[in-house]
Length: 281
Image 1 (tube, rainbow, N blue to C red):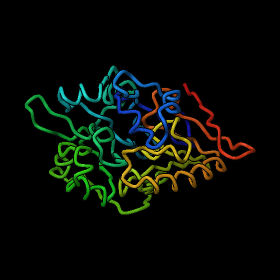
Image 2 (tube, rainbow, N blue to C red; image 1 turned 30 degrees about the horizontal axis):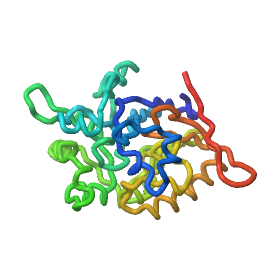
Image 3 (tube, one colour; image 1 turned 180 degrees about the horizontal axis):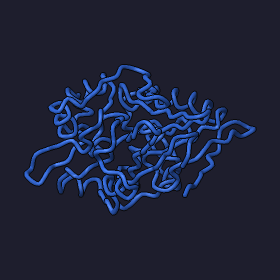
Image 4 (cartoon, rainbow, N blue to C red; image 1 turned 120 degrees about the vertical axis):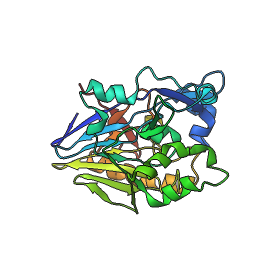
């Protein structure tokens, strides 16, 4: 789709499943199961939707998906299914990995940055995007390198360490314009320095929502994941952001929605918002 003079492509790196109760926190199953039906292990289907932005000056990839470095245990626990993967998706758009010059990681959980690196035929780990600068929040990087007991399982050193060795990591601190028209906005909530990405061109604006609002079923402020380390912060930021997005007619991009991936908000007279999905060629 076009956003001003920028070209945006919502990509696909497959599907996985997580516990529905954990994905919806305090929301009762009788409610969330109507929105996102669960399987016999109480897991809901989630998609992995990285975003490609071509500005004319930069080729920017926002998050890199789950990658392919997982083992049989992860395949079983998360029901990972990848009929389409990130690099073939890029090649479908006639774009080789070497042409990506900026990678932005919303945060450093395995389902968002697993595609940062890959395991070569000789078993060595290498950057998937050898000519890119990888931007990540400084505090998120610190937490990933020295995680606590609650979030240890969410980070995989193999997604980060090879980038340290090649000097491709660029740490940012707070809200920063990474390239002209693309800006980080730290939300906290899900992790200490979780960030969403704001994209603006010629007066049009889009938000890549990462895990602040992972699916279109999480629009309501109380619909906060049990995985969030600071859920009250998520709810507060989300409530303010929804008002801003509706007033500004922003395009919203959901990283984990398996069906409704892109749309806008319409404010209702009695309060609240209705999500209006959009489709693009």
